[in-house]
Length: 260
DNA sequence: TCATTAACCGTCG
DNA sequence: CGACGGTTAATGA
View 1 (cartoon, rainbow, N blue to C red):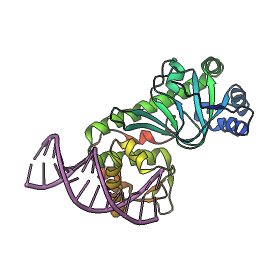
View 2: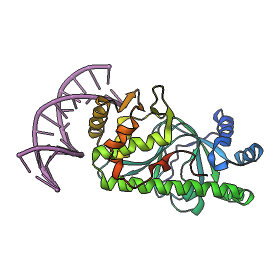
View 3: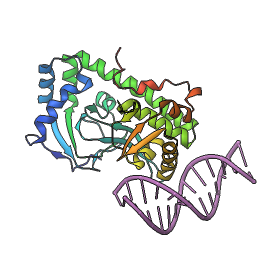
View 4: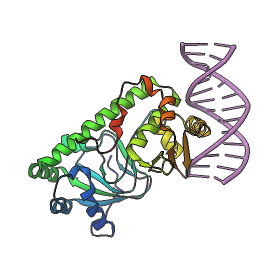
């Protein structure tokens, strides 16, 4: 069910910055700044408190959510009370463009990790934007194709690998999605993640995630500091993850490779 | 609240 | 049997 707690914040402080952020959204790549501003003018701005549900799996989708600031998780609740994280979202990314296009229910539950500012573009307005700017549709499709490729790897990962492999694959994928060059030549996963986040993503318990991460730290493959993980030895992480016999191209997790 | 460690226990190859 | 990983509990930051 749609969460009633989301506050309609149009006209309040977050609105201008949130709308300004839209020019950075990859969905609108290739459009003139003035065209993106016109789209932003048609969007509403909302805020979500930490841990607040933005929408639930199965809710009818009435439009496109775009994360302007903060962090969010897309997740499923599984029977035993655990949570399977499908994706982490950072600004400025759409939450679920697929349901926004086909108008069917959301595929997962979106939960704010931080205080979040969100833009919402209703489906009728989205349809109008797509009519005016076919480029946006092509951008959305690129993003969706990328997600399909990623999801394919995730399911294979969950089915085929043991806990070490799952955590390792999760870290590799996150370093593709959020990676920034670190000082020592490694890669920094530029996204704060609790051990629980890692566990929920990898599909293991928090203790197992800690076991694996502690071991990787002892072997100087990764280093963690205040919920930020640095991958010091990418090759070592790949071998832990047994990437050698993995036929999937996990470089699809890299940002910006949706377009040639 | 988050992170860590250890002991224990069931499953499975 | 032994490796693996989930469960539980205790503890520290």
